[in-house]
Amino acid sequence: MSIFKNRTVIGVICILLALVICFGITPLFNQSISQKAEIVRVTKDIHAGELITKDMVTTTEVGSYNLPSGLMTAKDNVVGKYAKADLAVGDYILAAKLSDAPAAENAYLYNLDGTKQAISVTIKSFATGLSGKLQSGDIVSVIVADYPEDGETTIPAELQYVEIISVTASTGYDANTGEATGEEKELPSTVTFLVLPEQAKVLAELEQVAKLHLALVYRGTADGAKQFIEAQDALIEELYAEPEEDPIEEGEAADPAAATPESEVTGRISERPASFSVTQRSRRSRMTAAVCWRSGAAPAAERR
Image (cartoon, rainbow, N blue to C red; front, side, top):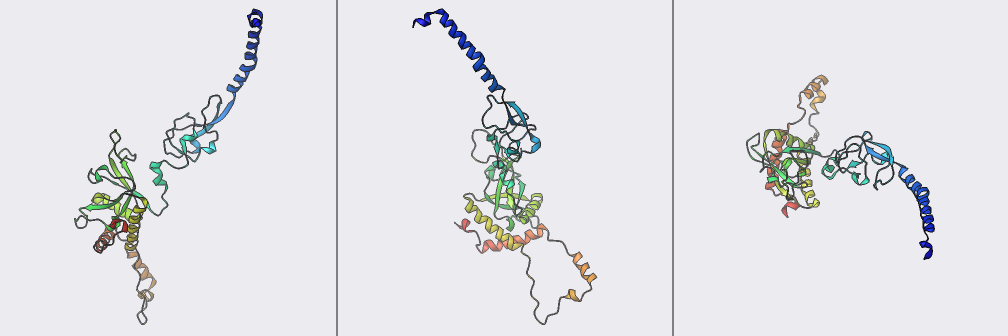
């Protein structure tokens, strides 16, 4: 085309393009990068699994150009959630780094409802903790070597079937008790059980005065483990049930306390021990356990 061979025409076209860029495209670009957006920023270091509170975050205005997608823009949408990863001061918070539930390794601590308790015991040697092979969800029996009362090795009735909810290394982090993945894994230092208050008292005493060995009883489905736990809970309920008082037959003497002065009755009540010690209860429990085992009273899951 001959028109483009004319230098004057080419010059005019270049001038027009320059004007469009300078007064059209450039202002639009400047406007886009000058726009502000409100985002949530970290004001205190937050560790993975930690609950985010109001004093840990704040909102601030930044340029909206080239911001990553998924940024949290409202403080209320961040407070009350759990961090999936470590967050440092000044970091922007992405939705992918937040969770409505605590981290998996800490979830068991948030599921306690007051019925059962979490209690840890020390793994004092490599062998007593099943050579580092224990996992969360395992059902174990707690074998007590050199029992304080009689020096025997026994399984207290309260601790025949106990559920493990965590295996923890000496660093405080839950140990990886699966197969090794190339890196040297940390050996477990403590084991945390989910138990009834009566079992927790027995474990607390035995931790101080006896040697504990953990024997694996069951590893499998949650339904299978539930059978063992239900059998153990039923035994605990039976062992610690309040004894029923014999009804007073017709013609028998009335309650002696009725004929006793109130001051004397009060004195007798105050002299009674508040409760049996854990050791006394454990002794009674071991006797009951022996009867259970001899009679073949074991959960259906174990018999299978």
